[in-house]
Structure formats: structure tokens, C-alpha cells
Length: 407
Image (cartoon, rainbow, N blue to C red):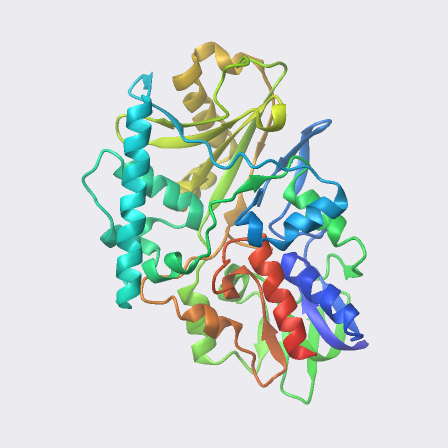
């Protein structure tokens, strides 16, 4: 039994931000993390010695507004300002510069139309708001599934347009997970301490964990909507209906990363840093080629297809990615693959998905999810962010805001 001012549930970016803020404000707290590590959906491993790979978040999105850029500088981490590549291979050939320009113009038209719709206040799905008969429609839908982790028929236009996108997306060489782990190193965290119950029927709160009961004045819940929606934490009394509705309106989609490492540089100095590899039926995958000069390739999947491929198993994901590589670079390219990592965020028991997207007509639910209950149960995390959802820095800022509100 531990008596503290605040019990923080989750040691991801939101939990780290809240803990550092409460420490600065002189409040006592405990951080309870269900898994064996700090960082939440920021998770870096080495696929081979000296070759870090992000299984989760990787990009410093909206970098000029992102507080983790300064953190990266303070920690001596390396990032570039290269952004997302836009080369594409389809129909057995590389697309011409004119086609790439046409692709970009199509995306700009879709964004302009969605901005127009959002300004009216009449919400609809991204699918309904965008052109459905263009040669670029399949590519647009695929890219949206990566950005939002759900498919276009499941994404609110108003919510998507509320995101503050500066078009500055900078990858971190050492890994976003490395950043979060090092940044949170001074935060005391109790690992392997999944919270299974929160009792707020009395004057304070009592949290049940495998290692005992925690008594606190307040609780800050930073877990994903996947965990909340699954009922993995039992609330006594139960959460009100409006809170359950907010959770259901902000589901986690899926976004997986498949990494293939090579024993040498098989692409050569003139290879593109990234390519969108498409087949004639619209089936496609974005491939990040040798990021930071590492001899590996990262393929990404999103939405329903990511769920389907994850259920098919790791080997299916590897085979799919290798096939895409062979389509672009020839069948011999995969002979030099020596190591593989495949993520499975839907199956992660402590997250149960990638990141949140508001369902059509439900953009207002982010504010509802963030609302405290009786000034004792507070909520933070990327799903509560009104303008930086789906990102680590959005979660971090929400944790700071919640801690300041409690203090």
C-alpha cells in the first residue's frame, strides 16, 4: 500500500510528461507500467548490432512545434529533415517526374476539399470527401491508412483536418524509442505492474496491481483506447456512458512495420531513399530504403490490411515485403536478407492497436475523453490530444496538461 498524490497508469510519452511535471511541482506520484519497459508505443530495438530500428513511432512530426526536437538535441540524438519520400514504382516501371507531380496535385486537391468540408462543420468520412475514380485514389487511401491507422471510410474529416501538420517529419537515427527511454530514465517506474482495477468509490482512489494496492488522491490514466475499450481496467463505479462512448468513438487502428536487414548495400549509391511500390490492382507498400545508411529496408502497412496481414503471421508479412522489393529491384534482391523484425501492434496486450482516429461525426469526442471524472480520475494520451493525436509529442503534451490541471 502506497499513499501518493497521483498514481499514473502507463509509462509512455504521456506518463513520462505527467511524471516530470508533477516532480517539478513538488507532488508525490507513482508510475505503474504494465509492460517490461518504458516508452509505450515508442520502442526501439537493434535488428543487427549498431542498427537501431523503431517498431513504433519514428518521426518527429510537425518538428517546429514538437518539444521532442529539443529533447533529441539535449540527448545528442541524430535526426534529419528529409521528410517522406515520394518516388513510386507501378506497372513495372518508375513513375515519371510529371506523374509524381500529378500525384502530388491530387493529394493537394483532396486536402483542399477536406478543409472546405471541415469549415462547414458538417462532418463525413474521408472516403466520402475525396475523389474515388482517380488513378491515385488507391495510393491516397493507402497513405491515409498509414497516417491514421484506419481506412478512409472510418476517419472523420473534421478530426483529420484538426491535426496541426507543418509538413516537417524528421526521422531519428537512434530511434524514437531510444529518445523516450533516455528521456524517462530519471522517472521512477514500477514495471510489470498492470493496473487491473481502479476504485474511486471513496474519497481518493485505490488501484489494484499484481504487486499490491496503491492508494492515491487521484489517478491519471494514460493507457490507449484499445485497453480502455477492452475493459482491461475495471472501474468501480463503472465509467459513465458518455465516457464509454468517447472511447468507442476513438478506436485504435493498426500500423505495422516490417524490417529486412541485408548483409551488404544491395541498392547502390543512386537508389531512392523511399518508394511506393504498387501493383495493377492497387495493392501497394511504402518502402523506406537504407534509412541513415543502414543496410535495411522498412515496409509499412495500415488499416484493415495491416490487421489481416498481422493475423496471417510474421512470415506472411516478411513474404509480402520481400515480394514488393522484388517487384521493384528484381528477384535476386532478397538473397542477401540476413535478419527480420515484424511488428504486431494489434496483438500487443498492453496497447491493442496503433493509434486513434475519430470516427465520422465523432471528432468532438477527443475533448470528452480528456475530461476528468469527479476531479479524481484524469485522462491523457494521444487520443485526448485535439491537434497532435496519433503522435508521441501529442501524448507527451497531454500528460503535461493533465498534471498541471491536477496540481
